Image (cartoon, rainbow, N blue to C red; front, side, top):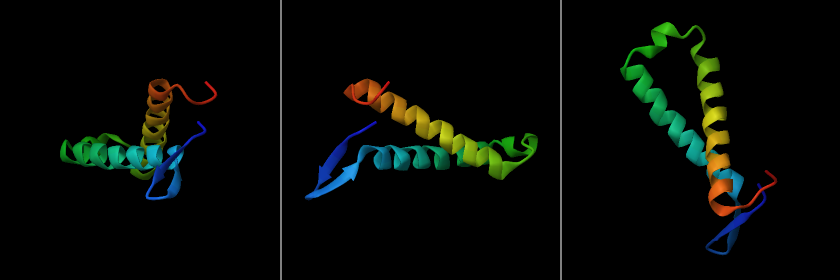
Length: 73
């Protein structure tokens, strides 16, 4: 997705904003999974956390591109 948002005269790439949204979503989901003791069934918690972040970032990017109609796909 190619695009920029202007905030206070500074151009910020949309992919950075979607990455931050994906990271915050992964933090929230990580807390929920830890509170539910779901990590007892996960073999490698660090690998799971990284893959969860990547999936949430891709989902955020997908929905942003569908909403704003930008991007290559």
